[in-house]
Image (cartoon, rainbow, N blue to C red; front, top):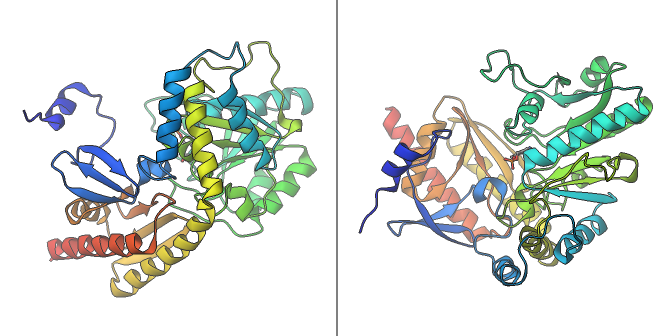
Length: 400
Ligand SMILES: *Cc1c(COP(=O)(O)O)cnc(C)c1O
């Protein structure tokens, strides 16, 4: 029996995304297969989630074992996977405490509450959070308000207040926007959705110094950059930055939905009086998966692979740029890369690459994002670049 899944989707699902016309049914390592048996190299890794590769053995068996042992207890009780995961994250970071949620947006919501309470206690009721233009922090109401796009046209108005947007990679912009109401600064180590924007080496040092001077919390949204993506376990390491709080999600669970807030003691302001919590957050199943995935990233040195393969991928993308003037800019770090075109061809290239067999992320009408699993090797990168180039050539032909 053939089932028309695309038809079913168009009738039943809320239409929030423009989907690629591919029904994926299987994944293994850096490859995925559609319902017709066609194989694709996955340069999206589930939106920077599958850092340990699709169907990773260690993660799959941890999930299977935990599913047969204990799934959910609520946070009323201690559970072992939650504390194992807490231990491996804390012992490999500069932070002291953790709280688990179910997504990146939910982790950021928790970080906002930390900033507000911190401001209440330490900064005379200050509550504003400075975030950057072109940032992305999620799609709940508050994380949407924090996200650095113009909100004037939003149908979701009124949005929660208390967010101020500054120029990214510009310390003076932060200084000029700091007032007696400011409680915290929240920045991505590298802006992902905003176009793969990489700040100067000294930016986060300057932010840290300013936060120290004014007593503000320095928070980093590492939902996309954390867990090896930039070539170090956490993105802040790349910039020798010293945040008080970081949030994680995407690459944390090896494919299962989990988020986390990590904080130092100073920013650990929640108390056990129902100020913060979660029914599913930190449950045994997702924590067992995330523990297996984190262990795998550390033991197999996937951060180092991301660093080395990222450098290789970058050089291959620059080769492409030299052959195709239609490519305006190539930028990235570790295994997070953006390719910008000088005309609005990104949707066409993205669709043509479906045919040539490589899956890309669409950033905007003139840019695509390449973010493979951290397990990728040179042979796979070469294959992906070839398929990408075939897709670019197809689009160029269509343009003539
Ligand atoms: C994806 C993303 C989020 C939102 O995470 P969800 O799990 O989709 O809620 C927040 N911040 C950054 C930097 C992200 O890339």
